[in-house]
Length: 167
Image (cartoon, rainbow, N blue to C red; front, side):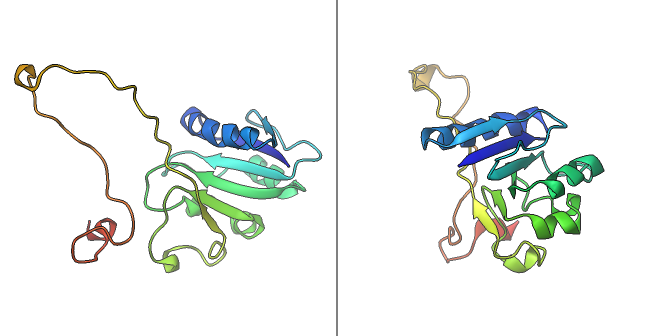
């Protein structure tokens, strides 16, 4: 298959690099466009990456290019906001898009626009492991260890509740 990628910003492009690499590894043809470009003829899937939540509505020229493409459309977003920035997408694009991809979705599908229900998929979290290295002995460290992260899954508290819904 032939995939074409566009992204709104540099962080989205950097995180999409892993997705592109996986497709190349699976022997697909992968092209990356620059801002303002359209999917070339013969493209099977156009994946457009939205930037972090809170951006303005998509530019009308981009929407026109996406809607005018013969390719299947996939919109992806790799930010940590609770859901995709559906408010940035006009209804015609919501209806035309084949699939919406993120690394997490709200537990209640009713929180999604009706046009997107049943057309969501998951991307793996973009985690880059650090090379292991020995630190100072614990007695010589000036601060305690700190861990950052979030619980995952739907039943991740001892009584079966979901931590994401508790905040």
